[in-house]
Amino acid sequence: MQNKKKSNLWKYCLAIFIVFIHIIPIYMVIGLAFKSPYDHSSRWVLPGYFYLKNIYTALNKSGMLLALKNTILITGLSIILIVVIGAMAAYPISRNKSKLNKWIKGFIMGVMMIPPLSILVPLYSFMADVGGINTYWGIIVALVTFQLPTSIFLYANFISTIPVALEEAAAIDGCGPIQTFFRIIMPQLKPVTASVIIITGVFCWNNYQFALYLLQSPKVKTVTLAIAGFFSADAANMNGAAAAAFIGILPVIVLFLFLQKYFIQGMVDSAVK
Amino acid sequence: MKVQKKAAINLFYIPAIVLFLVFVIYPFLHGIRISFTNWNGYSQTMKFVGIDNYVRLFQDANVRTALVNTLVYGIASTIIQNVLGLAYALFLNTKFKGRSIVRTVIYMPVMIAPLIMGYIMYFLFQYDGGALNDIIMLLGHEPVDLLANSSAAIAIIVMVNSLQFVGVSMVIYLAGLQNVPNMYYEAAMLDGASSWQRFKHITFPLLMPAISSSTILNLIGGLKLFDLVMALTSGGPGFTTHSLSTLVTNQYFSAQSAGYASAIGIFAFLLIMVVSNVVMKFFDKREVDV
Picture 1 (tube, each protein chain N blue to C red):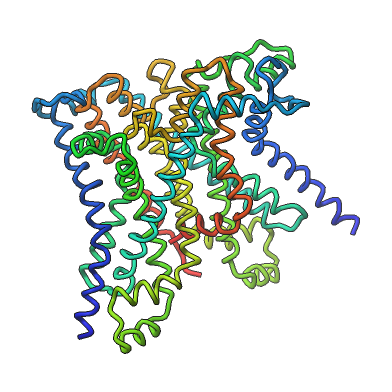
Picture 2 (tube, one colour; picture 1 turned 90 degrees about the vertical axis):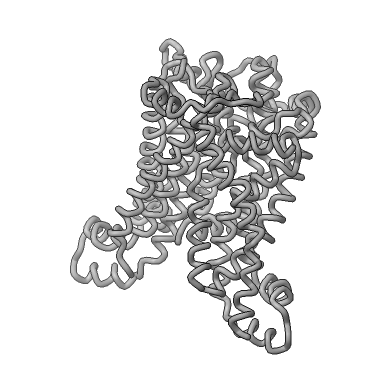
C-alpha cells in the first residue's frame, strides 16, 4: 500500500507540470485582459482586481461586437449547409456502391488534398468576377466547400453502419428517395451530426486565411480579422488586444468544456479511417 | 426497378459535386493558367509569360528559405506531436486521480484559433515586457528578443504549433490504446516479458493505424502552416521565417505579383502531394491487423 502511494507521487508531479505548460496561453490572456493598461506588473501576476474597461474597449472600438455578429452568422449558415449537403452526398456514396460512386468518393478525397494556399489567388479573382468579395455568401461558399469532404467522410462512414432494412420497408410502402432520406435516414444521423457540427464549426469560427482574402471591408470582418486588426493598429494597448483575444476564444472554450466528449469523439472519428 | 431507384439517389451528391467543381477545381485550373502570366492581381489584362514564374521560383532565395521552413514546420511539428502525444497517452492510460482534468487541459488549446494562439504567445515572447523576459531578468540575465532572431523564431513557431495541437495526437493514441486487447498483455506477462518488451512488441505494432493517422494529419497541417506565422513574425525578420503559405500571401498582397504567387501555390500543392503520398505509402506497408 505504502509502495503504491509512493509510485503515484511522480504521476501527480508530472501531471501538475503538464497542466502548467498547457494552461499558459489561457492564463496569460485572462491575466492581461482584466488588468489595467497602467498596471506594469509582470504578465505572470494576475491582477488583484477586475478591470472590465478592456473588454468594453475591445467590443466597441475595435468593432468586435460587429465581428461577433458576422462570425456567428457565417459560422451558423455554413454549418447548416455543411450538414445538409454533406449528409446528402454521403447517402448515395455509402448506399449505392457502383463503380461511378467509387470514383466520386476518390474525387472527393482528392479535393481534400488541395491546400487553400494553392487556390486562394485564383479563388479571389473568380470571386471578384462574380461579385462574391465582401459578401456573406462568398465566404460561406468557400468555407462550406472546403469543409464538405470532412463532413461527407464522417457521414459516409456512419451511414454504412445503419442497417438497410428500414429503407427497404419504406420503399415497399412507396416512399421515394427524397422522402426516405429526410424521414428515415436524417433522424438516425444525430450522433455523427454532433461531430460534424463541432469539427467544421470550430474550423469556420477560427478561420483566418479565407477571411483575409475574401473579406476586406470593415463591415463584414470576422473575429479573427478584427483581432488581427487590433494587434497591428494598436500595438501599444496589449491589454485591449488581450481582451479582444479573450472574447474570440471564449465561445469555443465554453462549448468545449460542456461538450468535451463530443469534441474528442468527433476528432477521433474524423482522423482514424 | 431496384437499379433505377439506386441510380436515382445519386442525384443527392450533385450539390456537393457542383460546389467542388466551381469553387475548387475551376480555381485550381485557373490558378495553373495564372501561374504562366504576369498578372498583378487587379488589372484587367495579363500577359502570358511562359514558364518565367517557375524559372524565377527555382532561383528565388526567398522561396528556398520558405520551402526549407515549410519542411521544418511540417516535419519537426509532426515528430514532436507524435512523440509527446504518445507519451501523454501512455501516461493518461495509467490510473490516477484527476487524469481527465489533465486530458482536458492538454486538448483545450486545440479549440483556440491558431491566429489568436500566435498573438497570445506574443505576450510570452515579446521583447518589451514579455513574460519570458521577466523570468530571464529575474535570473539576472539580459532580456532577449527571440522573435527578431530567425532560428529562435522558427523554433518558437514549431514549439507553439506542436504544443497547441499535441492534444489531437494524444486523443488518437488514447483511442488506439483502447483497441489493444488486454489478453495480449496478460499472455506476455505470463511469458515474463518486461514492460519495454511489451511496449515494443505489442503496443507499438498495434498502434500503427493510430501512428499513421496522427502522422499524416500533423504533417499536412504543418506543411500548410499559415495563421501562426502571420501572428508571430509575419515572415520576418526579412523573409527568414516565411512558410510557402505566408509567402504566397506576401507575394499577392504586398508584392502584387499574383502570377508569381499562383506559381508558388501550385509548387506548394505538388510538394504537399508528394510528401503526403510518400508517407501514406510508407504506412500502408506497415499496418498490421488486430
